[in-house]
Structure formats: structure tokens, C-alpha cells
Length: 161
Ligand SMILES: [Fe+2]
Ligand SMILES: [Fe+2]
Image (cartoon, rainbow, N blue to C red):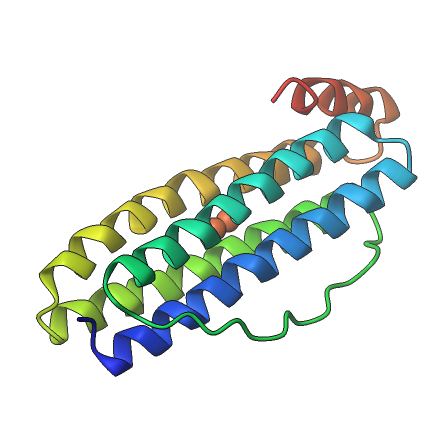
């Protein structure tokens, strides 16, 4: 059995990951509406990954004999000022999630729940990729600045994800 404390945290992580799914789905819709089909595709793929992160936590909590309780998902924005602003918001979101999993990992250690600790290592590693991908897009978009050609080139590139 899992502790009450860790159960509550796992339920919160499920909510966090559903929130991330919501956020990236909103970004995909924003980009598609603005005819950036490649960015929209990238965001939809990202949303799918976040759904995977949510269900991975959910299945694990059940496997450990825990009780799943799904909470409401907070509202997300429906638009961003520019593609750069959207990717900056994505990068900030991923940095926040990295911090959350870091604290959760430390809690599992403090509770001496070795199985949870090992399980959570996957998320700690996954966040390295999540941050790197969004940071890279932010960096390129900053270099592109107001170049329409550069913007559509990146849109085309991210559409291949
Ligand atoms: Fe995630
Ligand atoms: Fe993520």
C-alpha cells in the first residue's frame, strides 16, 4: 500500500498532467486557427505525451493499491500574443513541472518508498527532454524575430515531429 501523503501527491500529479494536456491542446488550437499547421501538429503530439504521463501516474497509483480521485482541471488561456510567447509559456510550464517532480521525488525518498522513488526517476529524466525541446524552440524563435520566412521554416520543421 501507498501512504496517504504519496497518494494525495499522485492524484495531484494526475491533475497536473491533465492540465498540461489541456494547455498544449489550447496551444495546438491557437496555432491551427492562425494557420501554423506545423506548430499545431507539434503541440498536439505534446498534448498526447502529457496524456500518457497522466495515465502512467494513474495506473501506478492503482497498482500500488491507491485510490484515484480526479479533480477539476484549471482553465488555460485560449490565445498567445505570438508563437514565441506560446513557446515561452510552454518552457515556463515545463520548468515548473520539473520543480514539482523534484520535490515529489524527495518526498518519496523521505517516506522511504523506494518503489515510488524508482518510478518517479522516469519523470525526472523525462523533464530533461521536455525542457530541452521547449527551450530550443524559444531560442530559435528569438533568433528568427520578425522573419516570416524563418517562422514558416520552423513551422515546417516542427510539423515533422
Ligand atoms: Fe508531463
Ligand atoms: Fe511536459
